[in-house]
Length: 253
Image (cartoon, rainbow, N blue to C red; front, top):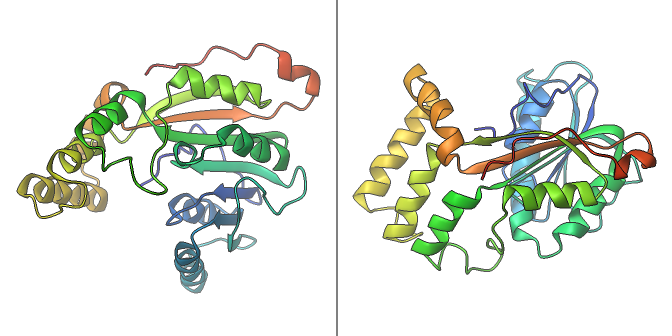
């Protein structure tokens, strides 16, 4: 289940990609399949071990084209172990809402991104996330949990302040918003509640089968209740462009 839309975020074979806060590795795996040279970085050692196993299995199965490479490593988003201008592409998906120093993370991503490079940032969308917080303190008041809710304009402003030029936005995962509302209403850790179990089965079926009816429904619902807000940006070639005026983008909440 990808949050980044690669039809809006082009990736070329050989691109050097950093998936920052990769978690289970879903975007890193997709980039690897597309022929990129991928570095998947996360502070969670257990998840990194699993991502490394999946990279090895994909290579064994021939799922990545010739020239593609994949590395999984532990690391700190606020102190990336890479030289300046190391990557053509940076992806950070559902991570920034966890990190107190989000401006510091943006600065590090801009540092390691090449001029002309592209970045994709995804965070929980303001409206659906506010519902989750209203329904459950447990949802966000946990160690490592969500510490802020972004408004679209706020995130885009922080990206511009970091020196990025946003060029597009959209919303994703509308079908997942009701699932999290149910989880928050019945207890975040209560997977036995009948409504939660039933909706989870629907989501698994949708992910596995990708039926046309749910694909169309999600496309129609994403602008209304899409759970994630996705923003795409480039790093200007010239520092003089950083103070410029990027083209307007859709910043619907």
